[in-house]
Length: 399
Image 1: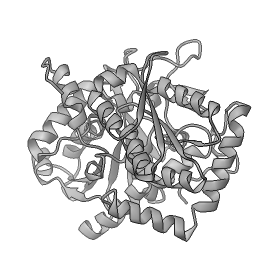
Image 2: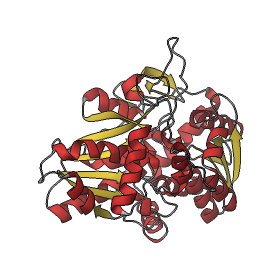
Image 3: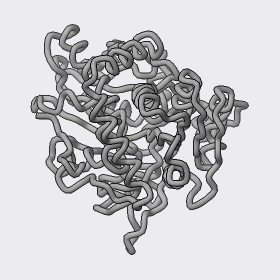
Image 4: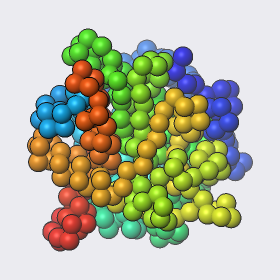
C-alpha cells in the first residue's frame, strides 16, 4: 500500500509536529477539518469542478518524439503540468487548500514562495474566492523572479520581501509561520510543499497526487503498460510526491527524484539534501536537511529559486530510507543545458526546476532499450526563468 503517515503524522521516523504551543491548536483545527472534508462528496465534487473548469485539468501526457529519437533509447513522455492555469503544478494544492480554508471560515490566505509559482497560485485562488492574501518571499528571490512578484501584486496580493537569513525560500517559510502564529483566527497558511508539521505533508501530497493518478491512466491508455521510471525535480518535493504517489505500489516502476546540486555536491553551493544532508528537525518536521558541522541549517544555493531549500519532505526521506525512491543530484550547468535542449528540440520551454529532471533523463535514456518508457513531470513553464538563464549565459535582458 502507498505510504501513509501514522496517527502521529510520521512516515517511519520522519515527520511529526515540532511546533510551538501557540500553533498547536491551529494545526489540530486544520487536521480535524481535513479529516472531515477529504472524503466528503460535496467537497470533492467542488474541487474536481475547479480542477477541470478553472485549472485546465487533466493535464496532457505528451510523447516527446524528437527527444526520444535524438537520444536513441527509451521512449520519453512529459506530464505537462506546465499547461495548468498559472503555469505550474502549484495550482493543484492551492485550490484544494483554499477551498478547505473557505469551508473552515477563514478569510485570509498567507503563503511562502521561492520561484514565485506557489505565490502566484495562492494569489490567484485568493482572488477567485474573495480572500485577502499575503505572500512572503526572500528578497533575493523577489529580484530573480521579478515577473512573478508583479503577477502576485496584479492579482491583489501583498508581497513581503524577507531579508533575514539568506533571504531565500527557507526564510520565507519561517516568516510565514511567524505570521500565522500572530493571526490564527481568520488566517490559513497555504503551505506550498510536502513539508512542515503534520498534516501539511499529507494534505499537499493528497492534492498533488492528481498528477500520478492521471499519468498512470494516460500511460496505460497510450502504451498499454506502466512506465519503467518516473522522474521529477525535488526541492521540498510536492510535484515529485504527486508524480510518484500512485506508482508507489508498482515495484516495477523506478521513482527518481532529481535534486538541485547547484555548483556541485562537493561544494558549499548546493541544495542537494539527500546527497549531502542528514537527519534533523526544522520547520516543524523531522527529515533530512543540509547542515553545517554544528548541526545548524546550512545556507544552500541553486540557480532554481524553487529548489533552493535546505530540506526535503518527510515522505521523501522515508522513500529514500526504504529504498523505494532514488534521489540524484543535478548541477546548474546540467539543468541549463536541458532547459536549452528541450526548448530547441521540442519547442517546450520548461521551468528550470523541471529541467533538473529532464537533465537526468538525458543521461539515462540512451542507456535504456527502445521498448522502455520514461515519464518526466514538467512541473512548470520556463517563462519565469528566461532572464535568469540568460544571466547565467552572460546575457542581460529586460524581463
